[in-house]
Image (cartoon, rainbow, N blue to C red):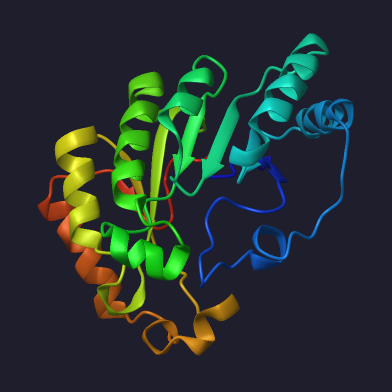
Length: 239
């Protein structure tokens, strides 16, 4: 989703989920990074725009929303005009999302699990399934389905990601059924195949392996069966 000139990605330290298999655990769990001011964050966004990035991609932004909104306001005054991407784990408050209406252009949430007991076990979120369903519905209400320009670059809308986990742990079929029946059959769904046992997953037997081809193909085939025709692990639309 990076297009020719790339997505201007800004990672925020820490995360509101504690995923045992996080591939960015140095940032999300070990909190590596440095403190910057709101003015510096605004200037960072502008630098990315100047370098030709197609958007500003805010990764795990939830816990810094007040500071981010203030920085965006400053950056817009200085000429920021490219789309803003809210790149999150899906565990979002609807109340907070409503405050972001008309600020965020592209929502890019994960839907990690369809079972809250599993989510509690591997991500420390005992109400994940209930929360993520409400959050994704609100995101879709605000921005609708993914829309791209004439260059096939995403400009606005919802892009949902689902990482296929080994042993069916993510409950992929229920995730896809939810998207198909309660969001939109025209939803863009990035079904990801790059799971590998990072962080603490190597010490959890059911997570300590790659997924196999059959596991991934079964999820992709089920998405087609559910009527979701805009699915891929290498999206044709580019952010």
